[in-house]
Length: 231
Image: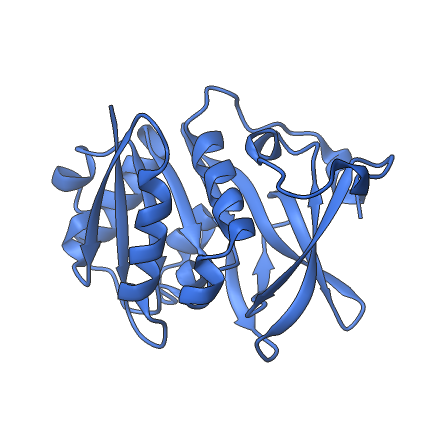
């Protein structure tokens, strides 16, 4: 059975409440055991990270010590499977290495509201997405749309990431989920999940499952540049 570290902490977000919901989702996945750590960045030290196969991270702001930074980055580069959720893109703003690993950095967000997320169902992570809507909604470009009520994070991001989902704000498309590699490791970021209600939605759960299953799969991150023209 593989072990998942679910780490949450920081400011502004209800990390305890959101991690409780995220942890509930993760325990529904067969073959995984979840350990939740709240408010303790020492869980990122290499001596502790080596006990885990996957890390799911819900953290706002804060700062890393050198030992914590190298523990996380080296673990991911050598063997790790990292899933960042929502506020993970706000964490450790004084650590460009973390930003490089994640693939992006938070810029701003509009008000909490309902908006539409467009999925690229040809993305390798999306084959693990279990649709809970009528299949007739899919069009010939293999894209799928779903409405969410959440905070829309507008993240600056590395153009080399493989975008799995987007949402529009003022006629500009912003990534909602992406994947990338980090050394020999794999990284998936999901911008959804501002509060307990958002984390408890079926759409969020399926996007989380898709990311965890993809990082844990043997399938490598593809390098198909045509993906940037999907939307």
